[in-house]
Amino acid sequence: MAAPHVAPADDFPLLDAYSQAVIAAVDVVSPAVVTIEAPATRALQSRADRRRERSGGSGSGFIFTPDGLVITNSHVVDGASAVQVTSTDGRTCRGDVIGEDPDTDLAVLRIDARPEGRPAVASLGDSSAIRVGQMAIAIGNPFGFDCSVTAGIVSALGRTLRARTGRLMDDIIQTDAPLNPGNSGGPLVTSRGEVIGVNTAVILPAQGLCFAIASNTVRFVVSRLLRDGRIRRSYIGVAGQKVPISRRLARHHGLAVSSGILIASVERDSPASAAGLRENDIIVALGDTTVAGVDDLHRHLTEERIGVSTVLTVLRGVDRRSITLVPKESPHGRESH
Image (tube, rainbow, N blue to C red; front, side, top):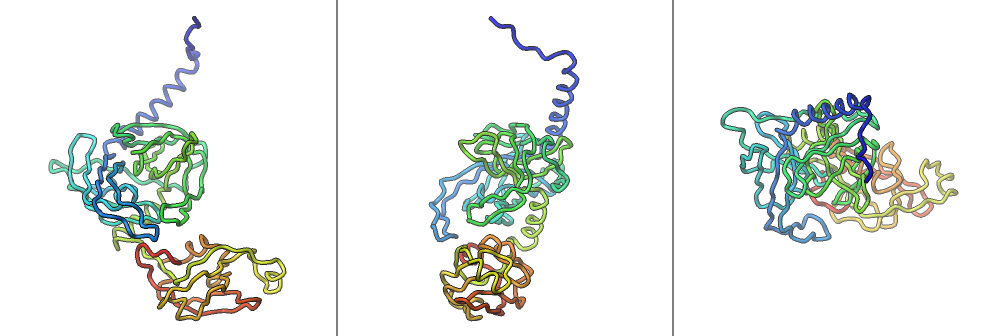
């Protein structure tokens, strides 16, 4: 029988330092981590696919303000008839959804602060300061195992990930800190105990491909949810798909793109309809910004464009046209752009 492997004596200080770093971070953040139970009784019909009624779900979250505001994933609470939040000390209370944004998979809840004092809170760090290779610690409640801790490294930065709504989420952190169902909404933290991301997804059956929404995105979205209860975005009222543009046509019109958005339909009483856009027009620019596909258009239809006159550059047949329109605020759940 082979003797068990024993680390060389010289390695013990290094291993101990790693352990102490993880322990210190967990001591700081874990008291702020909560379990979220979100049974649902109503059907979700915010998208054309008529998503099936949820039978209930659970996930994680963390308290980030002394007055009991909690960050979690939108998909954890979306469609919930009631939300129950349980802290690490076993205290359970109701959670009220202040706002959610399915397009970035984030939601904010409010719970009653502890009657005996302020709750533990976790602080959002600066995700722009993290580097590939640095330690990443995930804390959550996978499969109902409260306050489970896994550790790994930041594997990549600036990834994109498709939200359940179909929109592309930018600035996603990839990590190999293992995540499982129930980790969703929990914090991804540094060795200093700063939250650098909100755990949101894994790719199965792959191993070590886990993703978190960067804390700088979280900070922006949460501020808007607290202000408006939603993220305000603009829309023009078209449905379309990415199509290639011939090199000859692009060169003729001096276009800096090789693809655009072929309009499949124009919504009635929409900004696009009012401006005279037609089916089979190809959108190639919004204002001064080139548009190579639907994801580009989504990125640039921001709150700042609501009610602001904007020039849309389109190809109609072989002609190039500049069409002025005024984007409106997009109602939650709209499937056109």
